[in-house]
Length: 76
Image (cartoon, rainbow, N blue to C red; front, top):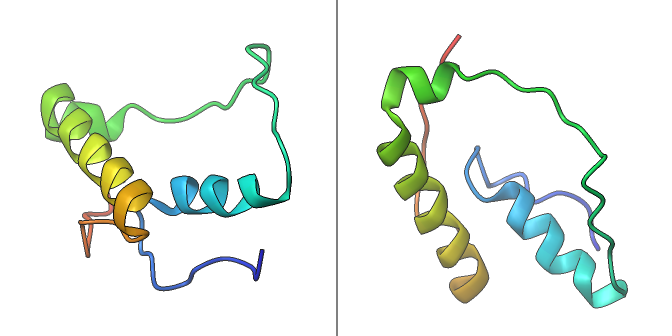
């Protein structure tokens, strides 16, 4: 897969990895895999803004192989 694309700062890195990994075979979705995360971004930016940003970057990564967002705000 040639490793991680270090030019992607935040949005789109997971889509990039999944897109490139798909060339090596199929993957399985398991609903019992759990990843704990923080809701700080949702609280700070709002659900619609976060959803729009993630969808825009997902589509850009899938269609053009690069995210549309160049930077992000670290929310801690």
